[in-house]
Amino acid sequence: MNQFRGLFTQLIILPVTITLIIPMMLVAILKLLIPIRVFRRRCTRIVLGIGELWAWLVTGVFRFAHQTRYEINPLPPVDRDHSYLVICNHQSWVDIPVLMAVFDGRVPFYRFFLKKQLMWLPFLGIAFWALEYPFMQRHSKAYLEKHPEKQGEDLKITQKACAKMRGIPATIINYPEGTRCTPTKQAKQGSPYKHLLRPKAGGISFVLSSMGDQLDALLDVTIHYPDGVPGFWQFLCNGVSRIQVDVQKRPLPKDLLHGDYQNDPEFRQRFQTWVNQLWEEKDQRLEAMKG
Figure 1 (tube, one colour):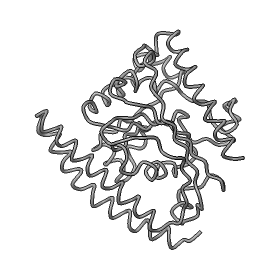
Figure 2 (figure 1 turned 180 degrees about the vertical axis):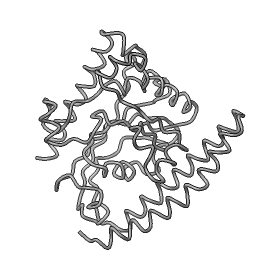
Figure 3 (figure 1 turned 90 degrees about the vertical axis):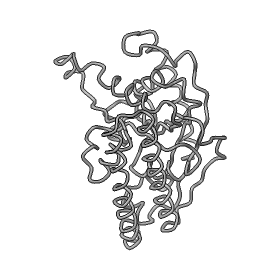
């Protein structure tokens, strides 16, 4: 690994991030203070434009500083005027810049559903707030049994966030595994897949029930690191020689766009079956990539 490249990349990205957060925050504050719908819509577009500029600059820095080779199957037709739901396997923080490189300038700006703890990340937490990324607070079954009033809290957060996206093209990013896949987690979970954790269908269902009519397609992304799963510092230091990416564009099943995932067992079973089938096919693709 080239430590100098890693330091150089950090020294470029950090001031770019700080510089762009300042106008982003100013526009976000104006949006908060002036409750006029048209004005707020305009502010949202400006903030998203700043976010897109940041992504374009950061992706450009990675291309300049790295020799990583991206082996991507021919991308299906996508454009910036439509909305998409992206599902992806999750192995490393590197997955995020990989998605940025694959879809750079081709789809609307990305929206992630984030763990609430990420709200406190220096600088990035502020940017996430300004971009209106929904912060999810996952509760255990034991906690929900003691606090039943918290049941459905994530769904309300999802619906509120998705309502803000209506009328503005968006690319929703979802990692159904919920966490990075490791052999230890696979064993603990008893995963039936060779290369994946069990997918959590609830988050996908919440997105589809909230804005399924606005979404045009599902982009099923599979990422494979042939030389082993890298850490983010390894990636910054140009320590990743190649990355394989497969993108499948799929229609969204109309019978699953509207339903009560939480309270309708039959609908929940059908939805989980659909997601599990997607995951079985993804596991097979990863097996082929590794071969």
